[in-house]
Image (cartoon, rainbow, N blue to C red; front, side, top):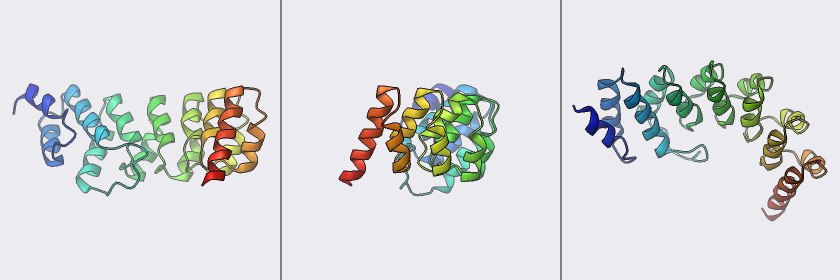
Amino acid sequence: MDRESSLEELKNRELPLTRVKEIFETFADDMEIVGQVAMNLSMRTSVYDRDGRKDPLMEELLIKLSETEDMGSRWAVAKNPHTPAHILQKLAHDSVNLVRALAATNPNTPVATLQELFSDEKIVRDGLSGNPSVPAKILAVLADDSDKMVRMRVAENPSTPEEVLKKLLKDGDENVAKAAEANIKRRGEA
């Protein structure tokens, strides 16, 4: 199996997962290929694609990628909607804050883990604030965060309670207030 042609193959999001796995297993020590495997899986899905059917091979690859030293692969796993909850729990404790932040954005991250991430640094709270699975009581506290981007994501979050959105309508940052207003309007149209 040729390394360069394997890298080229991985650019195809339609490449059968059996072939992706074969490439991964052949080049497991090559971090560029490992990263391309992670990107191939990312290209197939998005955090908003929650209806995607579960594929055991996809999950197997995500689990293996979560254990690599390649940070880019771990963050790709953290944001993938097919990543199993126990792997998201593990990634929520990763040494790299971006990996934790992406685990915080994933709607499949268990609520107990999301609650743990609440006291993490700003980049993680920022990811957490936009996650529709975050409990309302945490969103209410995040609505008072000193960082306007955290408040903005709370204002945009479809799970933010209406009373919190009404409070954000009076936010000192004009963009936060506009986001809260747009969220309230979307709910009225639904």
